[in-house]
Image (cartoon, rainbow, N blue to C red; front, side, top):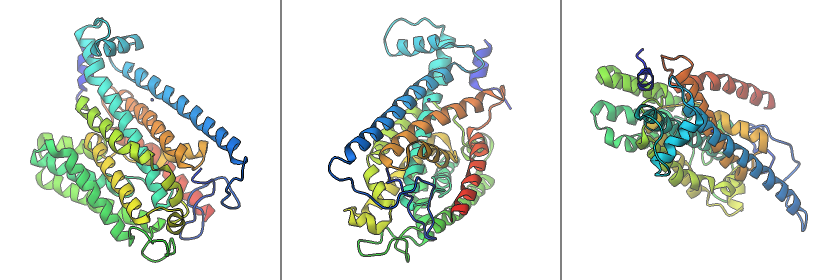
Length: 399
C-alpha cells in the first residue's frame, strides 16, 4: 500500500435514574435503581440538583480540556516530528497572530494535512456519539446507533452512487438522502408509527417503537443497503472510484481537508446543538410514549423531528468519513456509567467523549502501521464488536 501524503512530505480530544422498560418488561439498560418517579418537595431538590450540575460541569470541563489537548497532541504525532509549539505557531500564523516561523513544508503538514483531519475526526466522533445517545432514548434500546439501525449504510449507498456517477459536489445531499431512506425503511419494517398518542399504550401494538424489532429491522435494512452498495461496486466501479468507494465502506478520514471540517463542524452546529437542546424531551420519551404525552410532549412530531435530525447529521458525517461503526454505541454507555441517564448531562458529555475517542482512534489508525494506513472504521469495529457482545450478554442477564 502506498505511503500517505503526509509520509511523503515528511521524507523531504437524570432520564431519571430508573431504566425505561422494554417490551419484555426488563430494563433497557443498566441504571441505578429507584423505586418510583419522585418529584422533590419544597427545599428538597435544590441541593441535589446543584450537586448534579456541579458534577456535570466538572466532567464537561475535564473532557473539554482533554479534547483540546488531544487535538494539539494528535497533530504532533506522525512521520514528521512536530512539537506542540510548532502546532500553535502554525495555527496562530494562519489566524493572523504573529509571524510564520515554520518552513513551508512543516507548516503544510500541520495546516493542510493533520489539523483538518484531526478536527474532522473530532466533529465526526462527537456527532456519531450524539446520534447514538438520541436514538437509544427514542427507541428505548441500549443497542441502537446510526450504524446498527442502517443509517450509515444508507448514507454510504448515496455517497457511493454519486462517486460512481462522478458528481461529488452533491455527495453530502446524497448521503443524507440515503440515510433518510434507510431510517424510513427501518421504521416501516419495525412496524412503528410516529407515536401512540396520549391515549395509547406505550410499547403495544404497532404505534410505538419496540427495542428488539427496531434493532432487527435496522440490521436487515443495513444488510440490504450493504448488498446494494456491493452491487454498485461490482457493476460500475473501476480504478480510482473503486479505491474511493472502499474507503467509504471501511470508514476513513484520509484525504479530509478544510471543506470536510466545514461540513462536519457545520452539521454539528446546525443539527447537533438542537439535538442537545432536546434533553428534556428525551427524558420524557424514556418512560414510553404515553408518559411523554402526559408530560406535554407531542409524541409523533417530536419523534419525527429528532429521528430526522439524526438522519441529517449522520448523512453529513458519513459524507466526509464513510461508515464508521460503533462510536454511537460505545460512548453513550461509557458516559452513562459516569453521570447517569439524564440527557441534560448525557448528550453533551457523549459528544465530547466521542470526539476524544475518534481523534485517538484515527491517530492510531494512521500511525501504528506506518507507512501503511488502517481505515479508522476497522479499528472502531475491533473495539466496538466485543463491547457490543458484552452489552448483549449483560442485557440478557437482566431480562
